[in-house]
Image (cartoon, rainbow, N blue to C red; front, side, top):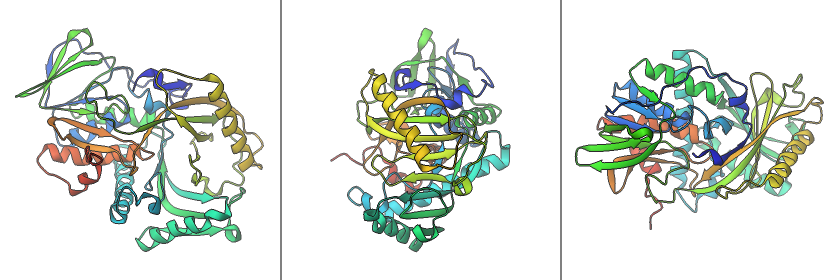
Length: 405
């Protein structure tokens, strides 16, 4: 992801010190796998490939954990961007339900990592809420609740009669332990610390400028002229894929976020759950371990290399006012950070995992949609297995060419 895709002062990279600086590449090296991208996706991949003792190199063109990792809210939920019935134009109900189940599996994987390696990233399991404040949408929200309930998810339906929140809620799907949150910058560095101890080599400020596909594998050329030779290359570069493919992977928008100064009392925010409304585009809210609030949304069409400060200011003001309107009992809301970044979505709300249909040495792990981090976890699991010759049937949901017709 190019730096022009991120604007403002992202909270996570501005409130954390750099725990480790990685060197840039200064010699020609060989590896079995090259992962291009040193953000949260690349670090997740590195972790899973290291678990299988696969010789792996991570190359990051800028600084580790910056760019898109710095602007993600890390509001992790198993559900997708659209409700189940809204996905029927682009997928089947069974596949949509399966993607929910895979989201639960990815959440469990993250918790396992925390349990094994310590909570060094402010991880916390969370309940989640999907709600509407519109009477016309009550049936839609109830249908989402019904479908989840019938398929074994731990959910409750809430309405005006049992609303535990201070804001207007006509209907909501309350999901017990349906999500999690953490600090994505700390999580990225924690993953890299673990996988480097298992032999993964990481280089930042090392841009891949050319990729050559040969009979024996892949040869990449990096800035300053050094080369890396490997068997395959995996693209974990988020929205910046032009060097590797001309394929249009998703629809890009710009999403806006604000983060407050620490709050004293979260009155009216039941259990400090993760919140998403049913608007289009939707708004999303979470709290942090140091008692801040993050609210995001107000997406607009993405325009490369153009940043409209007037529009951004308007969006930040809208988010601030929406937050204050929702939680009128929280009197000390004061915005400290304002930032925005690119966001990509697909018709079925899923990312792209697996080999290029025309080049088996070129693989992708692109976590598009709101569940990008969970898709990256699934990608780490399934792609490391695939490298060892074990194909997971669920990879078909994320096929790179599934929209080619």
